Length: 121
Image (cartoon, rainbow, N blue to C red; front, side, top):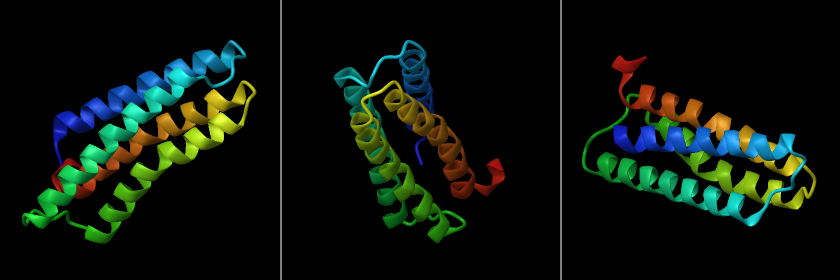
């Protein structure tokens, strides 16, 4: 895994979570800029998945391969699922769904790093 990309994902995810929480507290529904930010976050996550896959094909392996692949797939699938859910919820709770997802992603990224390099645990 690329540490700089992981850190970028974590920071972007937390920034989007704060933005969505502000929208929730202001009683605003999810808008297109929220979706654009989610798309950028998703591209970063796909990039991390591609880099991790290339590294695994190249011979580097995490300590627990199945667990790592499961976490990686989940991390890539959470943003689109929550974006759809958040966009369908046209009340103030739409951005709250996105904020919840964005608070989960950094935790999962840390766990991916721990699985990739057990010395970080």
